[in-house]
Image (cartoon, rainbow, N blue to C red):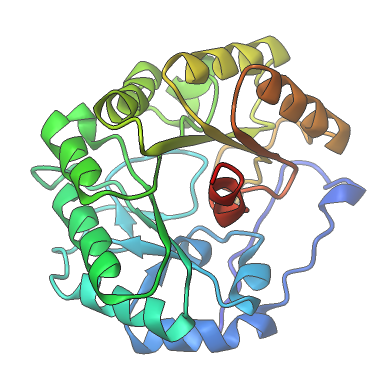
Amino acid sequence: MLKKKTMLTAVRKPAWLNKKIRLADCGGVKSLLSGLNLNTVCWEAGCPNIADCYKRGQATFLILGKVCTRNCRFCGIEKGRPVEPDESEAERIAEAVRRLNLKHVVITSVTRDDLPLGGAPYFAKVVSLIRRETQAKSIEVLIPDFELKREAIGLVIEAGPDVINHNVETVPSLYSEVRPMADYKRSLEVLRVVKKADKGIYTKSGIMVGLGEKKREVLSLFKDLREVGCDFLTIGQYLNPSKNHHPVVDFINPEKFKEYKQEALERGFKFVASAPYVRSSYKAREALESVK
């Protein structure tokens, strides 16, 4: 039976955030993935777009388990001690890609600071297997920072995904309260390392707004991302997964999202998705197709 993850906010949601999540539309894809013992970030993080994506036969695969070693206060994924990686997971993901006939595949993971290379070899294995055994035309990976271990990042680059995404998530002034185990400059450096190593790979990042950031900080973040060669950007409204997570400070008006999109495009991003319900994988295929 499908169980809906609750999304509570500190104040009443405005009219532009009245989206209804129809879990009945999730059944087919959810059953397929459950049968293959696969996780998605759509489900584990309580993404508000889950019904839209599942209805279209799309999903963002979550590898390396569903328990994260970090303590970010915005994220709905379970935190604690993860289980050992599943060596057969890549094969099952390839099978799901075949059954769903996916053309653009998105792979992400929990952060695994407990593993020597943060799980990078598993990213590389999944990418290579999808390339070899499916009809997918493009692959995107949303990676953790791997504690900026060059060897780990290099393994993912060598596997040859079309897009490497690493989210900075928020402005640097909020890191200590929102993602205390992460580092803004380290995240920027991940993107810089990727672009320097292989200019043929598109880089991508994403942020949430509504956490208490100032406009000038957001614009400064755009500048920082462009300075490390970031190509694609996603901007969405933060919605706290529960009352125990960081509260929503502001609900950002849709007009402000349009303004942020224009500001970002003027700074040189090749593709920008900016709207209240935008998440990291939103229009992922469209972003890549826009530059092909």
